[in-house]
Length: 621
Image 1: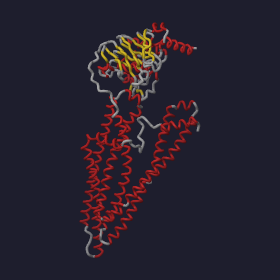
Image 2: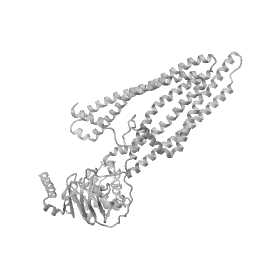
Image 3: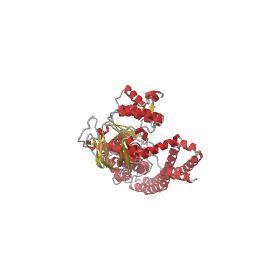
Image 4: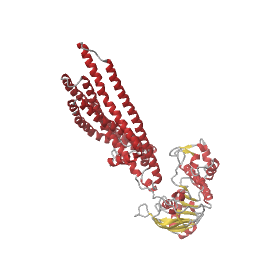
């Protein structure tokens, strides 16, 4: 394998599936099992009564099921003694007594089934109500989270917490807790019932326990490394498939189909090797437990026959004891499986509560209400850094008059987009102030501030819905006529009419069924329809061709007339008519003025403008 393939292999092995389709890896463990379970129990405190009842019915189901063999053993004894008496000519079989015993046993099993049904219904209700509460808590938490969290963390990870982790927790809670209670109750109950029959036989049976545990731990220890390898290879497979599909055109363009297939084949072979070993070893658990259980049957049968001959126990007791031996080994196996389920539940709970405990936006106590009037915007010695020790904006001051168009220009990383985030209160300044109508925007609620702005960003965002719904997102109560007028103003109406269903055409989840430029036009139409007092345009025409850009620019000029507009632009030709151009460098304004004024200075702006002109000249040539 080439060096490039080796690098790809290392990358894909490190990667794990993410996003809505990602699942928690089986056997994944929580770092703080006790703490995570404690948080989950406290969250479920609101369902305490239902949970307690579910536990009571689970214990009841196990208890009635345990008593069954003991009662049924009396029928076996009655039948055996009656048969012996009939053969000896001293009596016969008392079928009425046997019928009464069987009826009593049937009642016990029916009650056990009823308890199991009620327990299952209540536990399912508790687990799903818990999932419902956690999803709602996460959704509400998202609204209270600072924008910085989502810039630091992947969207797929957040989605995984609200979908996969909650689902894993719900399934584990429903299965694991119930199984834990019934298995533990069964073991304790069976031991008690066996002791009431014969302590010696109980001692023989209990000897199975250490043998069972030793074999279980041996198998688990042997299979664990193969399970880890299996999950690592699954991650590698998923990473390779994801990268190959997303870059399918590149793979074809460079004729790397064979290389990709070989890389996938090697990873797939390793997955096969680890998967069959892990599944084979884990599959040994049941045969081993059956073998140990059969040893218990043999021991009980031998010792029981001797005790029966001596008249210490009855034949029915032996039959009941053999049933109890089976009931004793089965929950031991179940408990070993429950441990893994509970670990997954704790790991899911840990991820969920880690998100719910993330720092939130500070509680707002607005002291002012933004008036619905046009006014000035002032940046007063603004200082800000995503890391307080590394300021992005050093000392920014500017005053924007009502109705002016202000352009923010400068090299990449100068702080242009950061200024927009501060203006929208996605972040708050570290020092200085941004004033709207003379009032610090921190005195307004964030909702109040954002209601003043319409935005068109370089990164377009459209959702899975009709074209009409996507435009109307700027004004949810807009009429069809208003939506169409906004589309016309954005020069997108003609394109929409060419779609299969016009305005009712559905845009898919990633909006890949329309071009990047068309997506940009739709977001511009959305901003036009919103009709806010102030506008923020962040490279709003970056994804359209030159001819369309000119048409949109005219529409934007009409839209911005009379409104305060903040424009971030790299194409300096698009902001020639701005009332004020602020040139940023290292978070500070180094020049400001009109296009002509800044060109006459021959400074940073002139250098940027001329360099673009030269690049355009080279391209034209």
